[in-house]
Amino acid sequence: PPRIERALTQMRGVLRVSVDPLLERVVVGYRSQETGPRTLIKALSDLGYDAHLWHAAGQQDAIGRLSKAAEIAKARRQFLWALALTTPVFLIMMVFMHIPALKPAMMWDAWPSRRHGWHHDGPHAARMPLGWLLSWLLTTP
Image (cartoon, rainbow, N blue to C red; front, side, top):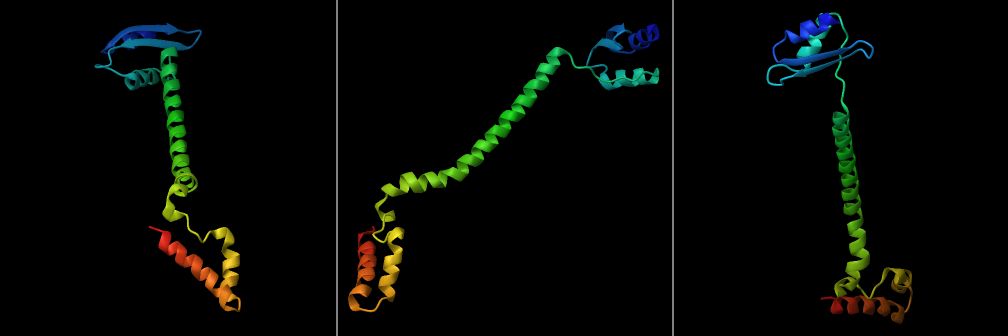
């Protein structure tokens, strides 16, 4: 591997080269304005070596932060969807019950008896649902 050191140190922008044959690792210090990882990898490939980037511990932390940021973004999206889907339910159950116009005298749980009043024979049975409807219309602002 002295030829690796020689080849890389002759490149423009390379500051230092350290080759570890046991670990099969080359550490290169360089000026990013003059050269970059692709150029260094191509130079090693031209020498007949297989090369790829190795991430130092600090870079692994940065990668971990990026994956954590993606996880936070996913949780935020899920929260916003849950908020959008539960807000109408909350409004119907907790807020609308305090608005007088939305509390009709003709409640839905008594609807079967009112329907029976419309179809039942007799003047009294027909007038009751009509009275309920009229009272609701007159009391609703």
